[in-house]
Image (cartoon, rainbow, N blue to C red; front, side, top):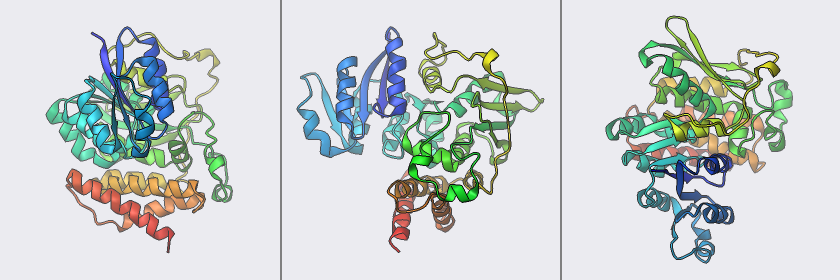
Length: 383
């Protein structure tokens, strides 16, 4: 039987790449559910091509336009509750969670509750609910398979040893668009500057996170929960070529790395087909054209978000929810021209420092911490 896939965030960068992969794997996979935030026309085009009967739109104001486009077999769900209903009713075996931010969080939690295989392209799920969702997955037998290139690399490298044998995880970073900029230049950076990533073609939010290196801070927290390691077992390296996607050092001194071209279709396909490996969907890595592989330590003075990531990974509890929400709100403010580039991390650090930490939060408390952090950022902007 073909594996049935539901894609949360089908019109975004990850979702579109996933559908490219699934076009080539039509004998093995069937798309049974699609969800988008606002680009309903694009989702409808995808639904027609893949003959998808279950659809969800995150923004309810587009529901009426969509209703007029549906055929008799199609069912539409709307709002965040609709995303959860999509998971419950589409009959999927695997959920690709690729909605940016926390909009798709509850749908992902529901997939884990139902014991499904979850391909995680959404950092926020583990950053916000890490201690809750990993325990939930253990109870239900749900699989959490990372799609992020860094965490996919670690996931693959860990097949060489057990979790107890890990000495250190190395998360690599290309350094983003400002790797060679001075601090003064970075302070004047515009949204257009921040969106000009030198290696990866990603959505706007994650591209800006790459410029501040907040994406790496979030990945530190994500790795802490996904691989059950401590914060001091994680290290970040700048690797401009973006060929080695991450590495695992085992306690016997062996270092296992995963290499490949910077193409998100590769980790997407691996997450969908795991534990199988099917024919490649992207260009192979030509080792003869790789002239050098450089590594350098990140300058934490230029990228204070990294220290914040280690702090939150060490603290745990409710701090991940606050970190993620404050950063999301600050990035939105930067894109709207309300704050300067350097203020993204400054505002986030301020809110994380002020929140009342809960050591063992419930899901409801994590969602409340998320709302509090967003409100605090907006309140700061109106002072």
